[in-house]
Length: 277
Image (cartoon, helix red, strand yellow):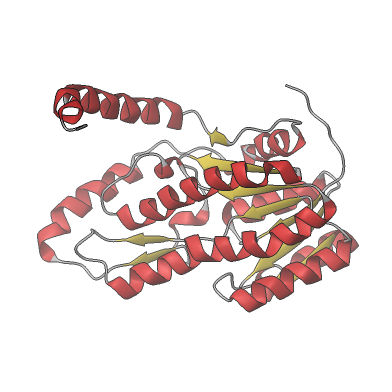
């Protein structure tokens, strides 16, 4: 693979904790400049004290479309360009398909999906203007296979995957690149109360959910501090991938899921072919 390392200007949502915080600090440590955003400005104010003029910290709620555009314009005018747009803000809704209220599901989509779209749509005119840029969407291995109890979260990532795949084809001629970052299980704060919303429970699912949650606790989790090197290789690559897993667990799991799908489609091929008309 061919790499071209140069100083970059990043725009990162959800910079206050988890991967967002780790990648923000890693980019600054390697000498890049970062526009770090979070809903609560005080949660990232220490970055300014540590990294000085290399970082611009801004308050941003990605569900507020007007604020998204204003903040991106401010970021672009401050540094004169934006090389990497990283959509990292998001959370998970815990509850079965029956349990979760529609208002909770809508709120989840407002942040995970529509918030990301607001950032992309506001950033594209700026990236076209400069004739370059790299959009990084922080997806998940759960954007390729789903799980019970967090099915609505998975569904936001399935939509996320489709949108970024379409986007990549649409903006390639403008010199803009797109990559989906697909982490597996990592020991981040994603499972904290700040990153989870619990749906109202139904007793009939309590045993099932308890077993599921116990299974999650037993997962081997990767070290999130080991991930920046992969992110840097992606943004420095002359031809970055559309998708990349983080960690060694996702590929075997997704390979099995896809093999199972193919086997089912093959088993029902005769029925499918018969109705071509």
